[in-house]
Length: 222
Image (cartoon, rainbow, N blue to C red; front, side, top):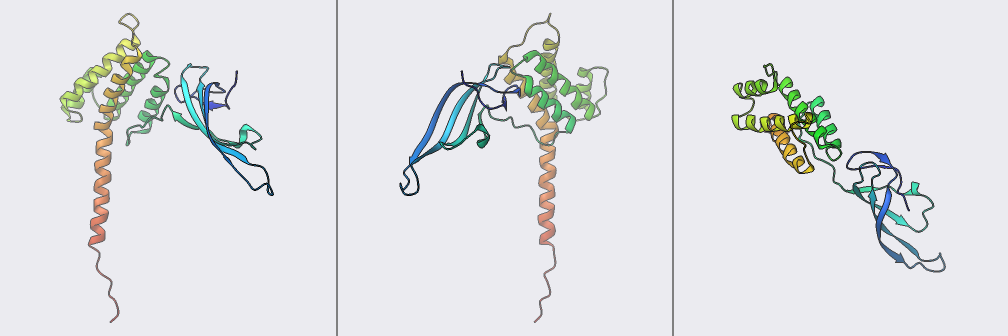
């Protein structure tokens, strides 16, 4: 049984050596003038690694040549899974919670849903929503035109998934629900934070362009 270098899992972020369950190489042999030395084989190695913590597969690649003396001479590039792209413009505490949720989504779906419900509460607190519970805070956000009524329904759906995750007697979530919970969450975050952030950024850029256009031309000597 062969093992990789110590690396973080792209799914659960566990850091350890992983079992190499498959590999393939894409190399060439360069013919070198015998006067200067023998031919050299070099190229790219691809490895399929199995995480010992979550048992999920990672695919990595690295550059290789036959005169490498140790593993320290190459660096893995993670090809699968691809890194998550998070919505931009998020407050630090909300982004931190979102990243934490993404790390555990393939380990415990119920815990993932609970964290995403917590994220929704953080959004309500950040936007200074009033109410004794999450449902009332969401309604307050709608009344203040922070989110449209349709998005309130989306938020309620996310809240309900979180409730199922938190209470064993209600039911059990599966990996099939992950894309739904994720899509609901991102829809809310992008509407409340990303869209205004991009609008502000675009407005700032336009102001700079306009200010440059209004500059007086330099008085050049005749």
